[in-house]
Amino acid sequence: MKETLLPSSIKNKEKRSAVHAKLKQQKKVEKKRNQKVREAAEKKALELGEDPPPKKTPRTIENTRELDETVCKPDDEELFAGNDADEFSSILKQECIPKILITTSRFHSSRGPDFIEDLRSIIPNAHYYKRGTYDLKKIVEYAKKKDFTSVIVVHTNRREPDALLIIGIPNGPTAHFKLSKLVLRKDIKNHGNPTSHQPELVLNNFTTRLGHRVGRLIQSLFPQDPHFNGRRVVTFHNQRDFVFFRHHRYIFETKESKTPEGKDKKENKAARPGKVVARLQECGPRFTLKLTSLQNGTFDTQGGEYEWVHKPEMDTSRRRFFL
Image (cartoon, rainbow, N blue to C red):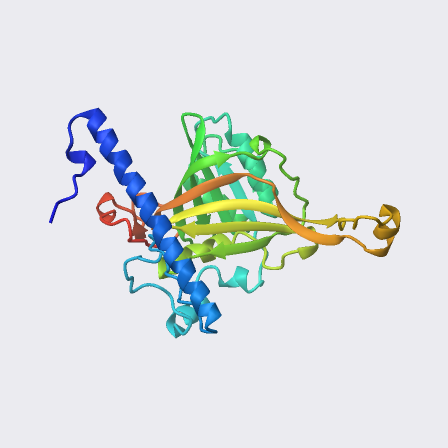
């Protein structure tokens, strides 16, 4: 049997490119051939009144994920019993209203103020305080006295926001996220302007016990009674341990129905009202978060105990996820 020559084994650049193009063309032809075979089988099954052959599910990184014992199940009684006693239960049961303190690191940032303004427009009842020379522990103590429920610290590096620290008040936990792919609202073309209504919150794919805990931490930043008439929706979508943030508003538009030929347009418009179509308009900002650590209690770099810390040796497989 003749072995397939791999392009990577060819040293000459021109020959390597030619072999690569030939292999690519062969794959394309084979793909079209398989598609024609599937279409013929489906057509034959329909003619005989039989069910068409089932479609094959493509292999992706998500559906070939490594098995994880910490994945939450709907009948996990221990998990749901713990929800009633965790640090977020009073907020999520609507026993108290979230009150958020937003501050910065000690380094100046050119885009930091604009990002903080965007955060304040997203999170209801959020208040910004300048950091000054205060230590973070003193800020946490101040937040406890003033009945804040969370503290968000926007960390900057080289005048660019690069991390978020979310601290639950008064008993933690403290989550440290790496911040990337930040696009401010003013930089989004044709962005919408959100109202002051409390947004609807959507959390996707927080499937493990760690993900469940992080999801409840994020959920505790927002009131649990959204104003649906404001048509605002805030989304935290977890995919491969990257949490993508998006902020949209619903827009309802009336599309006029097409006028049949040979009829008066005015009469047709009055007789057949237009169809109402819903779409999403992005309000911004958009950014991506990646959890680097989750600490028990409030911020403490020396004596704090960590529930989870990301380490480089954990990245042994592309199909291993933690959230």
